[in-house]
Image (tube, rainbow, N blue to C red):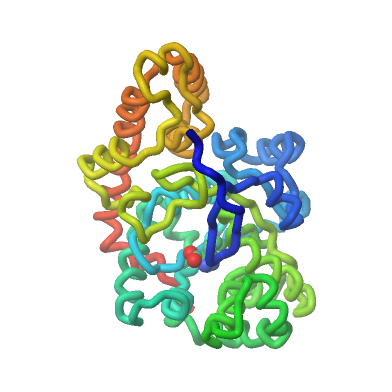
Length: 376
Ligand code: TRP
């Protein structure tokens, strides 16, 4: 039986309920990625990434304008980020591996922001603990394989000298009521949280500030982060900059079922970048919500439902690149030819192969942090 659905909520500070992406597209006023745009991207990349083909990255703002500029020789840069409050899980990695593909295919720079200020202000954690997570999380970002020559890390409190003057210019253009409406904040929030969106906006213009000319920006993100940049897109033209373009990804669901998004706070709902093969196996076997039938006999007869099956969704959204293999798993599972236990075994192997490589790169990353840190 499916769980009774909670109402959908999607903000940078809460994602809950069954996410209806068609509805989100309307509510957020974003544009669905269509075949025409995919064909246009393919002209430059030579291939279409499986996450685009499968609609995992599904909507955008101003990608056509961005490509117009690119075709005129006005190259964009990429910008994304991480709020370092805990371990990295596979939902984060999914966005970043896609971002790496964009960097490789378009040959562009990436600016990566670590919002230690944000997590200090929004979470019940000490400044020191957040610093520890900043160092830890940088290893995962480096392990993704971004080009060190083209990738620049910004840490909000460390690069404050560069960022703060831009943040105050931004902040002066937004009212408290705008922030309250965009983020659902109440009067009991601390005043740092109210200011924070100004810091998240800044990397979208930093290259333009440094080069004293406007450079287009593309922000790959999971769609809960969109409200920050909706505000930024209103403000930046008033300050003489381009509006940043955005490409939106879906949320990788938590292990426990396809509502909400994978979070870092609960061991039982997430797979972390540092999990051992045994931990991955145990979590998938124990927690991954199954779309299969209750008994073997019933499953063979009626088949499973890949749409609500978390293991299948992980394969589709991230871990099975091969379209043919994915289709076969889909069909076999639906027909009852493949069992939940077999599907889970397959996913466990896929994740563990992936994490083995990622973790080896993560080890090596320890000596590379300095290369990625932005220095003026
Ligand atoms: N606020 C994001 C988080 O909580 C981090 C972040 C900063 C970000 N800048 C970004 C995410 C740009 C996507 C794009 O993790």
